[in-house]
Image (cartoon, rainbow, N blue to C red; front, top):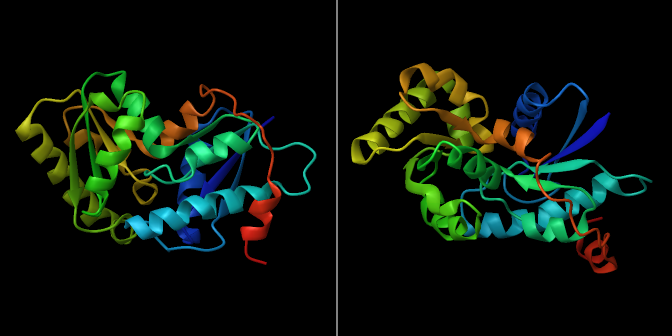
Length: 234
């Protein structure tokens, strides 16, 4: 059995559960999923400040989840589309680590040129800064956001899907793309529900991470430094 640790960098347990459920469905049968929620930070990451805190919360959640274990997880997924703390956790962990944006862009790029649809207008400039750091980021031709955050969209999935389908239509009206990423932990599972209404493949960022983590390179394994323990809450 391979153990997959999912870290939700925000404090919403509902989002943790939704991500864990979809990852379990998308994972091979020999994968056992453990999901943990950030011990501090924002209920949903929708600003630069909450994103900065989420990177610290990701490292803290990993340290707290693996403390005292003889063997750590075999893979780690950071359940946020902005990938907070991804490179820092790769530096510390001994297993492959990925996050939602990296995995979704990697999967979408296999189709060719792609676009991103996500919740929260603040995410567009944040993702524009993130994409150049991703291996296939140049394949992303467009980013379309809706006003509501992922948590707000999740509260009314039927209305959310209508908004997101309309966003996909706006993307396709501007330029042809070969796939569209439905990005964000709060949107887990919505791509499949929307697919029949959109004429190009929709990539669920959560399901993509469940698949991509096993193809990612192993991490550096420097272990948990003492100063990280000193920064963590009691």
